[in-house]
Image 1: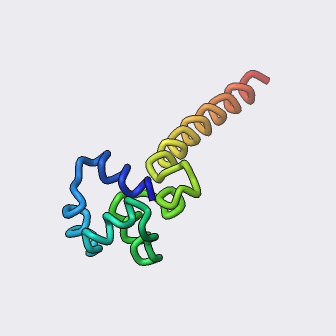
Image 2: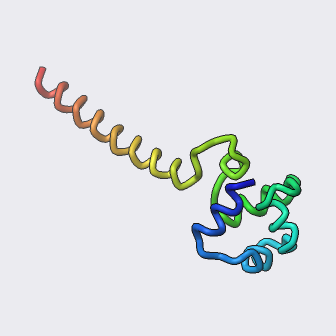
Length: 94
């Protein structure tokens, strides 16, 4: 579970900080980070919610986290506006 440690360190948090916020024991978090044990579904959901990422991202199934998806959604909205403007331009040009 490298992403669990990576997410914690990226936010300059200690394991005890994450434990207090998520209700997951600090030793259990340590075991997740070192790969000694795997998190159960409860822990995956709690950690994903705490870090603001998808469960898939946390588990390494996807490389897109929620903030990446937000960026994609914003870019799609900008592209949609450009297409709308081009369609209006083409319609008036006829």
